[in-house]
Image (cartoon, rainbow, N blue to C red; front, side, top):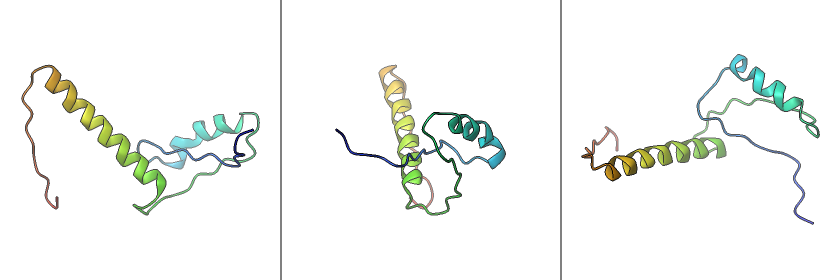
Length: 83
C-alpha cells in the first residue's frame, strides 16, 4: 500500500480573484472524498506554487524557442533590466 495523503495542492497559471475561482472551488467541492476547499493569497516568491508557476512559464518559453528553431526562424535574445 502506498503513502497516505491528506491534502492536495494546486498551482494556478495566473493570479485570480476569488470570484474567478468560485466555479473551480464549487466543482472540487463536489468530488467525492473532498472535505474542504480553501483559497489562499500567496505573497512569497519562495512558495511551492510560485515556483511551479515560474517553471511552467519557463517551459512554455523554451517550447516556443524550440519550435521556432525547428522551423528555421531566427531567434533574437533580449536582455531584461535587472538580469
